[in-house]
Image (cartoon, rainbow, N blue to C red; front, side, top):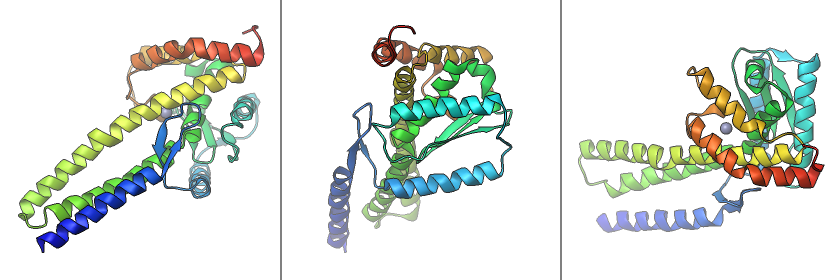
Length: 267
Ligand SMILES: [Zn+2]
């Protein structure tokens, strides 16, 4: 019995390794290698479905200057992102809501909430937030997270096999430890990495589309000054506002050079 279990375990580990290394792809803009098993078409279909579901329950703004501004900024950013992701059907919607939030779902389905506008202040600031959300979609962070969850489930099966002879109590404790390890050793570090990557892609996109990238760190300064409250997606508490501001300032010379190359020196 024991030998059979270890043979199964070896098959899972070896198969998992092949699966992991066989499904690596490069993230546009950053070149990071990521594990993604979800196809672009499948992810986009899920994104579109979720988007329509959310918008059907939201107060969508279709008229007026602000909705037009969101659309105009989004199109400019989508145009300059096209070389890196030719497959997206970008959509940009303004939602009337006091929430300071924005999101972009797989496939490019993007929404901005009116509650965000006091923080973004001007078009360059709004471009920074839309660019950040587009960065998540372009880097396929949602699909990467889904793919990683599959691996964690396989890992849980492997742990179960390994401890099959042990007491129920020990198995329960080991599973809890495995769950915590997966959360703090895997999911949270990746969530911080995703935020950082979206910040970087957003900064480069805004500069390429001739917005002023120097507005991006100012938004986080305003967020810090505004104090606590429910942290919206784009303001995920990991990494801290200070870390984000430091990173954005570190990347700023590159972004300004990209802006100058795309738009001339009038910025
Ligand atoms: Zn984000």
